[in-house]
Amino acid sequence: MIHPFYKSEDRNFTLLKGDCIDLLSLFDFKFDMIFADPPYHLSNNGISVQSGKVVSVNKGTWDKSRGFEEDYLFDKKWIALCREKLKENGTIWISGTYHNIFSIARCLTELNFKILNCITWVKTNPPPNISCRYFTYSAEYILWARKNEKVPHLFNYELMKKINGGTQMKDVWMLPAIAKWEKSCGKHPTQKPLGVLSRIIQASTQPGNWILDPFAGSSTTGIAANLLGRRYLGIDLSEEYLQMSIRRKQEIDDPDKARLYLQKTQGIHRIVNDDDQQVLHDISAAYGTKLPF
Image 1 (tube, rainbow, N blue to C red):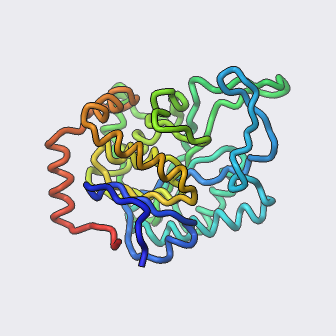
Image 2: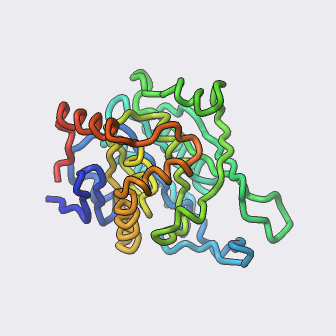
């Protein structure tokens, strides 16, 4: 029996502590969407610039490369487990850089996913290249794939068009990296901005849907999901970052804070209000889609 590390009073934000490879096989539940920000395998003694200071890019032992083949086998294992937890019409989004994204694409193809897009997220405020020996790193990549070749997936095309000023949204997104106001509850070394996760969630889910993040970190996925009326399960090994996730969830339980964060987040055209919460409640009551723990 799985015991949640944390479950919010509204039951829309649940955290599990442990390795996703161990935990995903212990329960039977299907998610509408999965977002994964896995190890990029780049903590190999490189350096970068942060707030004008030279810093190490080492994130921890969890992010170190074990060689191409071992990194690939690790990716394939957790993606295969995620596939089992995805609804037949569900989609998965996986972020990366050149360090891991090619391995991810190979795994998705071998596991019979249909890759829909490779989003290029161009950061409008990247750190400078201090070596001056190559081009500045300013982009990350996000693969979007559906579980089945022949089962249609959800894409909120008209909403994306509206967010993009009335024209079709392209697969290149110009969005800023993490902002200072997003670190009010602490700092995670690979924290994604709400602007990116909010766009992903709006593009491929509906209110009331369940979203899984197997590498939760500080749970930006969950914060964006709850702000937009979706439900969330996050898994992470670190108690420190799970506690940070709880603080972030408790912070947006304040309606004024939730509205402020929505207003600050690029690409948001709706505010969570009482009507939205009632829709979420009605969907939950109608379908009984609750986690089995």
